Each structure stands twice: as structure tokens, then as C-alpha cells.
Length: 464
Ligand code: ARG
Image (cartoon, rainbow, N blue to C red; front, side, top):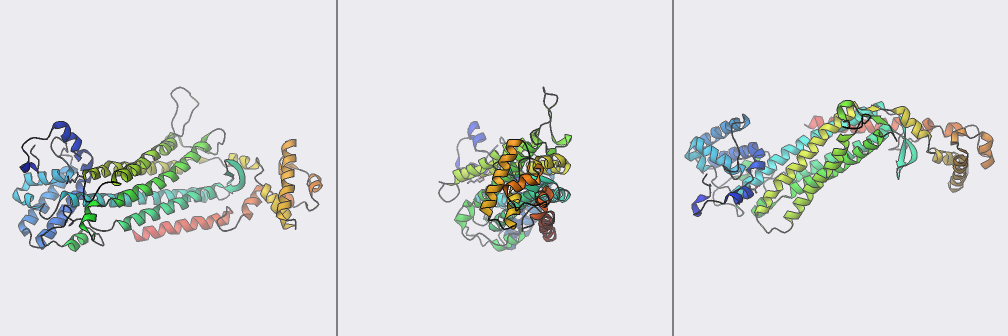
């Protein structure tokens, strides 16, 4: 098929070059944004008297019909036919409405057109990702709500450290996700300016009204410099960076679920619908979903690296390297969405084995700090109390005991400050309930944390 830019050329594009150069296989997913942008552009052209009202009407109707055809699956976006979605839509429109279609590209270049389409597409996707993150935060709150009293060991160095609750643990992730939402919002705010009207790179001689187009497409500003307008991909990089951090969070959580599912922990059991079996080992139930989330994190980091690398040495203004922004950004977006879509219901349906958590909490001397604090509260300097407790733990390990199975006289042999109430002080329930410092695991304090996240979620709904 003849290229839209055929005039200057004497020869057909080599077939291999054609496939190499073409982007329609992947940028066709921006078909709706391309049409939306073109309708706004045509509206402005007519308003400014650059094209006639009749041409504008023909273009608008033609594009709307084309949109319906594409959505009905009637159009094949093959690289043999089209170079990219921008050329495809213009060509398809012109086939349908004739000369008016050829006037659409007045005062516009594919460089500012693609810059616009990508921005519109990314903006829509960010809103979708945001909604999925908010939903997962909601799920975490719901699960946490039920486990405010479910004591589990908190770890440092993957060694049992101090008692927390399952709710407290989950709310840590809810807070990470809240920051992820804030980052996405920041990305949206940073990209809220219209690139269209930058032309190929140097604006245009036509009397265009960029502000009108910005209003029609719901941008609160226009990009201030035409070279920057066609060359900026910061928002793609920013998004991939935000998504990398988000994936890092999901991957960490997945890693924990993988551990919790193991026989070594057995803190949770995934629902059958959210786990898989082995082809040879009949006893196996594998947390494949979590492993895939952990594994797919690499794709998103890869997208960020791709974007940073191809952008780092291209001179102003547009260069074809920038076509590489699509697959990388799309890959990051798709991956994150797919991961969020499986992780939320996986959490909703899993069984929390609270008894196993509590049994693990009973082993590993996670109440040792509380024992030391007991002595400190009775007047012993903390450093001395630490030492006494350390010696007690040593004794327990030697004799195969735990702190709560030592007799009072064994305690008193180490310090006369120990009294009957030591058993209450080192009881796991007490240890958790007393940790009511702001941000701590005490059930009432975690309720406050859940409430905080819930009101954040509520405010998001109000805004939407
Ligand atoms: N498919 C191209 C891209 O994604 C569109 C812009 C092409 N512009 C050009 N001057 N070749 O970047």
C-alpha cells in the first residue's frame, strides 16, 4: 500500500524494513485516543476557520463511525497495510469520507499527535491502576479487620523478634500502597499539559488555539515549549518508576505469602482457586501466583531501564528511538494490572491459620524484650535488665524451656525484682496489647490504622 509520505520516494520500502519500522501492531491499542485527539483537533481547526464546518462534521462523523468499526473488530491493523495507528486512522478515514479526511492533518505532525495519544492513553491507564490499588488496599483492610487479635511473630533478619498481629503486618502493606497511590497522583499532575500544537517540533504558522484543545481533552495546561512538547517522555519514565516501586511492594508481599504457605511456617492456606498443583508430586499445592508476581517484577524494572536508556542520548526533538516508549510502558502497565487483579482475590479467599501463627509466636523468645521491660519498670536500668533476660534465655535454651515455663524461684535466682506478675507481663496477649504506642500492633491501635486507611479510601471515592 502507498505510504502517506509517498511523494518524495521513488521506491517501495523494503519488506523487512517495513516490519522493522512499523509500530501499528502495538500502538493500535491507542486507537480510541488517536480518534479522540483528532476530533478535538478538527473541532479547533474549524473554530479557527482553518477548515470548514462541513469538513469538521464529516471528519467527526467519519471518526466516530471508524471507532465503531474498530470496536466491532472489523479493522485489521496489519503492518503490511499501515505504519502506525496515526497513519492507519487517517488512511481509513480518508477512504471513507474523501478529501475532508486529507485536511485533518493540517497544523499537526505525527510527532505531536503521538505525544498526545500516548499521554491520553497513559492517563487513562493510571486511573485504572489507581482503582485496582485502592481495591487491594480495601481488601487488606477487610482481612486485617478480622485479625486484630491474631498474634504472630514479627521478624527481623527472618528471626522471630517481637510479637505483632497479622493485622498489623498487613497494614504495613496498606501504607506502602497508599504511598504508591500518592506517587501515581503526582505523575498525573506532572503530565497534565497538552503537547498537541507543538507541530513537528517548531509549532505552526496556522492560527491554532491550543487552549481550546486542552479544554476539549481535559488538560489543565498546554505544554509551554514546542520542542519539549514533542520530546517529553518524562511521564512514561515516572510512571514506570512508580510502577517499579509498586511491584517491589507486591513482590515483597508475595515472597512473604510464599513463606507463609510453606510447611515450615503454615501461617496461611491459599484457596484452591488461587494455587496450583504439581504434575508429579500429588501432595503439592503451590503458590504460583505469588511466584509469578515476584518474577514479573523484573519486566517492570526492565521497562524503566529501557526508557531511561533510550532517552538518555537522543538530541532534541523527535527521534524514532522514542517509538520504543510504547512497548516498554505498555508492558509495565499490563503487568501491574494483571498482578493486582490476581493478588486481591487471592487475599480475599485465603485461610489464615491463626493457631499456627500463635504457636510460632510462643517459640523463639519473642517476649524477651517484654521481660527486660518488666525489670526496667521495676527500677532496674534497661541495660542491666537486658543482660539478666539474656541470661534467662540462655538458661531456657540449655534446659529446653521457654520464659513462661520457668518457675518463679528460677526467675528470682536471677533477680529479686521478679514477682508473680512476670507471667502476666510476658504473656503474648499482654505483649501485643501493651504495645499501644502510635503505629504499634495493639489491637486498638491497629484499628486506628485501619480507620485511617479506610477514610483515605473513602475520600478517594468522594473525589471520583
Ligand atoms: N509511530 C511513531 C512513534 O510511535 C509516531 C511518530 C512518528 N514520527 C515520525 N516523524 N516518524 O513514535
